[in-house]
Length: 64
Image (spheres, helix red, strand yellow):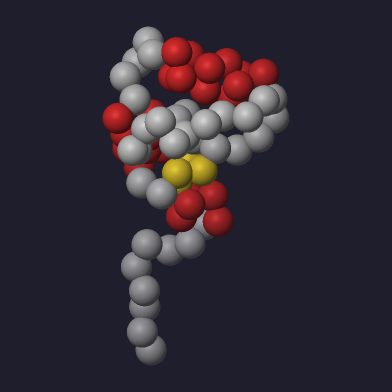
């Protein structure tokens, strides 16, 4: 299954109940995978995680 994102400027612009939202929810429940998004809001909307959470990257940089 291929999902096309070019029709949306951002995953943040998705409305609950839209066909794309329903397909994304079905895809996540059907297949074993990880959805990664750059921001927290986009991750919540896509039922995924942020890049920092996935790779456990610290959000602050510590200088020595």
